[in-house]
Length: 154
Image (tube, rainbow, N blue to C red; front, side, top):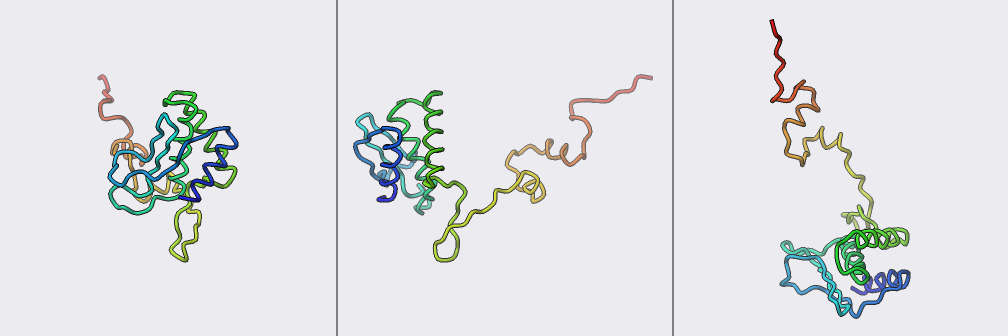
């Protein structure tokens, strides 16, 4: 939590934000990753709700930036989203936010695992769209959608 607090202060200093307190979310809260109250209190969930494993630091920073953006825009409108992206970009530039880093199996070091391309997912059968017809079209097994019928008039 101390590291998150230091990073929060760096982000706040850059964007002239001020929060009252940054604290861990209560363990019994299961439905949100963070919350920002109107008095400036920010709570961040540190553990996964069901597995109780610690969340990745990049997830904590992402949630932190989201909650810090609420200090300026207490809604989820267009200006909020733009400001949230600005906070995340600053955090990324400063090396605070590094999405895609996964814990290594050796000595707790981190390494960057490449994101799997759509072609690789298709080859490995790792598809999340649930659309068998589209996969068949991509594999060139079908030439026309099932509702289109090619009739030849004699």
